[in-house]
Length: 336
Image (cartoon, rainbow, N blue to C red; front, side):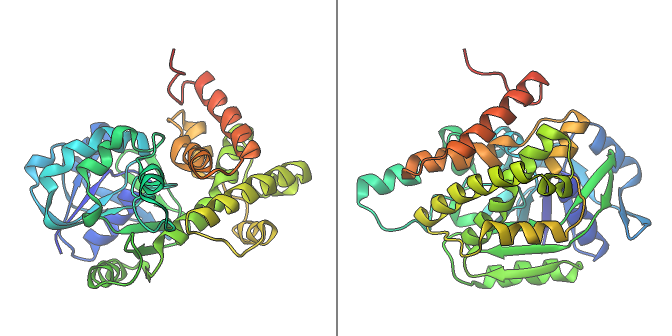
């Protein structure tokens, strides 16, 4: 399988390096200092304390790569909005597009929604302004090419072209409309050959929503406070607020075909078992990088309004996080 990875940040770089080291033909789209570093010495991976280099064909022009069997998109939401129209040269009639991204993906409401009348269905499935304004991503990367993916691993980028693995190597893959398929199994087999714990899912939308249910609160609260997850969970007032927001998100999930049976308290037990870690949003805030607020918080708030679920706690969390990020120049200014 011929693979291109779009974006060589923490997650994209880790996936690209593991695939290349497993002898899979891998190309990549990258920019700036990352592209220069990869061209100079390859993509450097630090795994279990050992560093190794993976040689991959990296460029900043999709036209130089041509059609691929699998396009793994590992960009942050705002970057994908701009990049999506430029990815057309990579996508042929049978190309699989696998977005390895945080939060609500652009395709999330296009399928799997509960039955409704025609007018309501059109309203529910309209592109989310928060993650796909005017449907630009959906237009460039149509649903029939997409496989959903949920990423359960942590990595960091200490310098351009270098990826350091933290913990976890689990990737869940599935059809947006549900069910198992030959292409889901093929992608999982490819990822497993590179050392990932790759799991096919018969309901990837529920997997997406479940992961989001945990990240919705810990990510923005960590960016607001600078606290690691253990300190966040140790504060009873913060924990109570998180449970309110999680209850709202669970109610939204029930309306969009993604019910959650677990309690918020039980989900926090799972988070605590991961130890004192810095969320990806906290790492971005500390490094002065733009924050991925829209896919993780804004989209949930938008879906809540669309399906008629009140979200006062999620709204408060969104407002505070967005204001902090705007003051620090890590989120676009409000429209005037």
